[in-house]
Structure formats: structure tokens, C-alpha cells
Amino acid sequence: MQIAITVFIDGIKEIPGKLEFNEECELKQLITEVVISMETILKNHGIVGYRKQWNAQDFPLGSYLQMKYYLLNNSKFPLVINNPDEWNENLETNLLDELNLIKKSVF
Image (cartoon, rainbow, N blue to C red):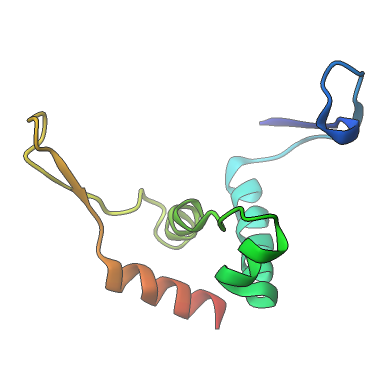
């Protein structure tokens, strides 16, 4: 997978950006590095601290959990679908499992 990161001054895309990173790597390697960075942020700031530090943006906890689970189990995060394809379809995950994954990974 080819990954290119271009930085735009003040996020303005009308002005040409500067290519900061342009490398090839495997998807699992990228996910591993992202998860390590996310865990460092969680350890340093916490969930609420992250929100306060980054201008009221919530920590991407759902994305973190899905990537961490994939790294540990080489499969998608378990999701239960009740009443599939019906008007009252309901998607569920196990909150206790999610909290345990955070606890095991960050502490």
C-alpha cells in the first residue's frame, strides 16, 4: 500500500501543500503504528483530557477498538445484528469486552 501525506498550511487546500511522507508499507504495519500512537495519546491524556486538549474533538474510541481487535485477532470486531434488514435492525457490541480491551491494552 502506498501512503502519501500532504500537509496544507492552516488546512487550506487551495494553496499547494507540502508532501511530508510518501512510503509503501503493509496495511497491518500501518494499523500497528496508528494503534501504538493512539495508545500513547490515551495514556498521556485520557479520553476527557483528549477532548479538552483537541478543541472538543472526541477521541476516536470506536476506531481504536476495531483496529486493536483486528491486530489481536486478525478478524473484524464482533458485531451482533438483531433483526437484519428490518426497519428495527439493531447493531450491538459487548461493552464489557470493549472496556476490557482498553484496560488490557492501555494499562
